[in-house]
Image (cartoon, rainbow, N blue to C red; front, side):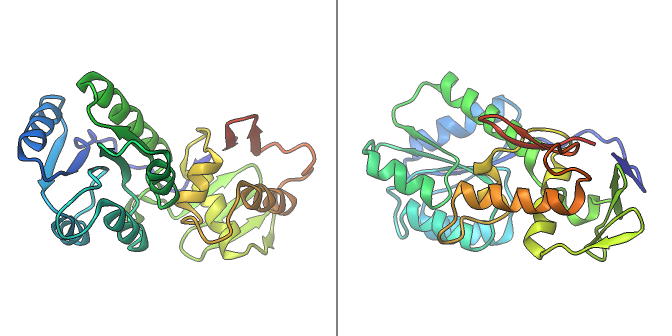
Length: 244
């Protein structure tokens, strides 16, 4: 894969975590532990404050309680995703019913942990989630090179056009976004769940089959032999990755 411009090599800033928890003692303990691990930590104590903070800030990860004053954790999560918020969300709650977990995942949670939980396990889950965020999150517009190229395919980010050889490829907006997301994963495997969350935002009626169908159409448009793809590869039981 080639780029028309190189990104500067700079040290990555610490990951930023927002703790949304109304129990002062628990919140203080979590914030201290996260700061010791090198994270940049903020904390709010109710749902309305969380939404106001998230309207102005962009964390990498949110630790979210469900039973909050003013606005429940479920409503915070639902409204945050409606704002196109892309931070990873870990629900940390004493509610241990399956129905709560299912609801959390359906409205956009990335993980669900039941209180009480050991600190080492929680830190390990956070580390894994942040690693996935780094691997799959789209670059900000200022970091995007003007063009991506792989094989004989060229993707122009400014005009949102794709060409193969010297011919333009007619992609739908969703197909273009899907291709760009796979490109930005830098060869890493992207799960169907991640694609549904980040590209489709869990649109109504969406299933993993929808993702597969879009991938198939994309292959037909950019691969020389869609039956034996060289670039958009299926990783069995894991997802897809783009091979440059």
